[in-house]
Image 1 (cartoon, rainbow, N blue to C red):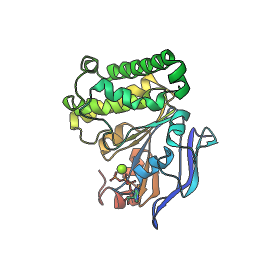
Image 2: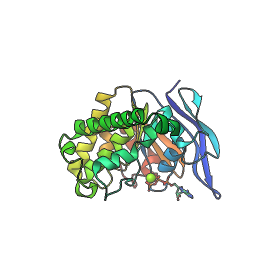
Image 3: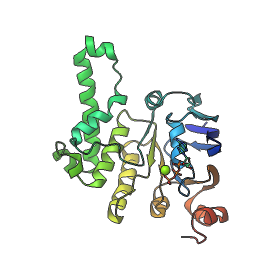
Image 4: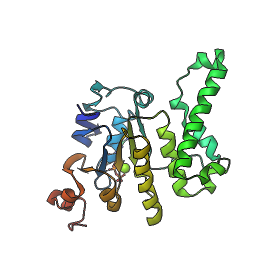
Length: 258
Ligand SMILES: Nc1ncnc2c1ncn2[C@@H]1O[C@H](COP(=O)(O)OP(=O)(O)OP(=O)(O)O)[C@@H](O)[C@H]1O
Ligand SMILES: [Mg+2]
């Protein structure tokens, strides 16, 4: 049994099938890339898995358990975390404040704990903040020194790292990255690729789904690539097989292999 699986996963928006009958799996420790033209359903696919959208049909299972109808925070607590295509950070807040704001889903305490056991809640928040800061320093030791700087004043790659580290708090089994190198230059893209490998070194069993348009990233990061077109999976395999697949070339690579 795969760690995470989808069967016939589909969603319809007013007559348009944004995702249609997608069978997908990822095993523990694997990195899988998702590619496809703009509007082909990649982000929507992650939105269904993470509970933001409710599937019109089909199922998502995690370790064999059906999680299709769970709410986003329940899916996060089951061990599926993600980042977003566009930044979810508040640029006028400090790095530390942004981390704290993003950690509320990692919090296990409830309202009664806040009233009756505030010390326990504080400890929990502090340890999540510490975990996130440790991970950030693992990517870039300089960030810790800038933790009270406004987020808008720190480099774009470090802002991306904050979002990834927030997602990693609580050690998820599955990490889904939606275009982590968007807006990064070539050198920063190389550093981001190293960061993704670093995540694997630190958390060996984690599986990572990465959406990317940059074929350099797709060549070097995932072990397997799944290709979407018009909401459907049209191909799947190693980078070498994908770039020579006729359907993929027609749909995505503009008629010429890269
Ligand atoms: N909430 C929604 N309501 C209606 N249509 C939607 C909604 N969310 C997504 N769609 C549509 O679903 C299709 C797939 O969009 P999606 O954002 O998943 O594409 P994508 O593959 O991530 O594209 P990109 O590479 O540009 O990020 C698009 O036609 C989009 O307009
Ligand atoms: Mg998208």
